[in-house]
Image (cartoon, rainbow, N blue to C red; front, top):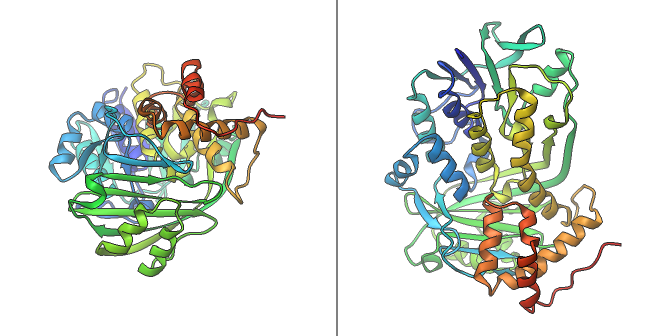
Length: 430
């Protein structure tokens, strides 16, 4: 095939181009933003100023698409770490047991990660990354998308168009213009508000650990993370449902004091602050059900946040985007089979995030008896995983998208949880 066009130079768009260059003579990536020549934040990715970690599965997949990129990032200051041995994971009021998991995550700032990915993708044969290009519509003929139209009226013909335009994707609107039904949309109103500050990192902080994750609970619906980054920095992001931290150092520390584990409060109260604090707000988690459509034009695909925009506090978005990009290596690029394949990727993390969100105060959505039962079981699971490294590893394999969520309720796992003696009731749905 000759030419593919990717809408958006986000991580999803760049990884999409990395996959498509193996199948197309030319790949053009179009982005409305001005793309920086150095590794700095850019206007089109406001969330880049907040904590980003790369899960083990995401790191492995990006290395498949761009061989050697992990080593390149580490050479520039990024850090690898075992996500069980070098991390503190607090869930349901307990810290998961330590162990050697073999799950190696990557600790790196979003500007450095995206910048290096963009450099590698731009250097691939036949790939062109074009900034300042606003796509306003699709070209089509005889039920097939044949390219895109830019804001200045310029047509760009293509054999395949992939929309990686994020939450603001216009594909649902464009489908209507072409005479197709848009996908049904699932929304979970979370009103997540978060704030971020950076701090100087010392070698003795957290005893040398690289990651701290404090998940919100129903009793304390605030969460936060501290991730080590290049240049001896911590990035600390804290969030709440319907409330976020103030950005003044005193207000930021007061919010941290409201977390049920003390680690982040100790850090932000004693470490040297650097840089400017930032806020962000996510009103809802959104999933567009392209896989349920009966008709869809050939020559058009959708990936990344344009398909499913998760609650970012779970940190799964970049890994899902990488796995979706890898699906583009499949010989069958017909839209509906592709959407059914990536739906299997999205199902697990969507189940995890929605199940966790729906029990939080003020979250809008259908809290079914099944969700109540699963969350009650997970409380008991985490109580057991606090002193059982094998259970902790099984949870981390799910959260890193190696295993599906139902694996946490396999017969062997259930028996291990029940034998743990963790005293948390698991109600049966009415």
